[in-house]
Image 1 (cartoon, rainbow, N blue to C red):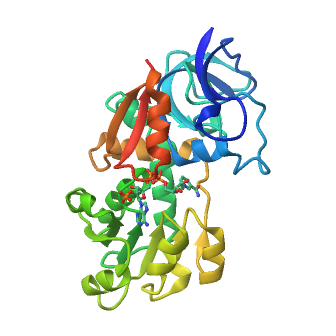
Image 2: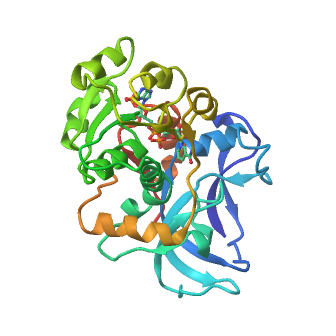
Length: 305
Ligand SMILES: NC(=O)c1ccc[n+]([C@@H]2O[C@H](COP(=O)([O-])OP(=O)(O)OC[C@H]3O[C@@H](n4cnc5c(N)ncnc54)[C@H](OP(=O)(O)O)[C@@H]3O)[C@@H](O)[C@H]2O)c1
């Protein structure tokens, strides 16, 4: 048997519980992974709440979690490039990560470099990949100014570092308590809330060349006017605002080949996913509740084994 943390109905945290499931059997194209660490992401509670139910309904109970790292225990038909015992990480299609065993599609998996910890690797395929792909869309050149809206969470911390290393001047909005953290990643911190646009304008009077938005809604509208070119507003959260503002909404593309370079950045020391909380698997509920509250500092990961 294999322990898993599931939700039994679409709804709130009260639908979450631990269960013992039969050890899964990998189908074609899948890896059976003994999970060492599982990333905790806002999408996990959004899936549980049913926000994505119309797009991809799940058979319930469904295991929470969308990104893992671990060791390959079995291989499904047609899988090439992976062997039993390989250390891997990767993304799951909306569910399956908070478990002792996960079925990871080989297409969305990559090898974990030995020097990269399982906990760091579990933070790459959703958070760091979203940061990387969002910044890629903005075609930033050295000297450009980027505003990262929502800089203090899992995606934000990766975005600050990736943009900094492109030679970009980075400004990040976050709560006041995260000022030192944002500065340590090379960004100028600006507190969000009333007057945020004026505070950013005080730092960069000619506006910003691009915005990577990780919050959406009023928080995005509050800063959107700072973008010199509205087509260079990219949001991972708010398709409606993107369309109203003339910007771009995107969803992270899951592709194992694109994950390997992120692990190399971590290995080389250029990217630290800032896993600030490593929670024991038994504390999955508390870890997800904290992420659901919406004010994480860096990334939360469950240590499964
Ligand atoms: N489109 C996609 O493919 C995709 C992929 C992954 C994630 N997402 C979405 O992207 C969003 C961010 O994900 P994440 O993993 O970075 O979340 P996270 O780790 O929970 O971080 C969110 C951060 O936003 C900050 N924040 C809250 N209100 C804010 C405001 N008004 N202005 C600025 N910052 C604010 C929070 O802390 P403070 O308030 O303390 O600053 C927190 O640090 C989520 O909505 C997630 O669902 C989308």
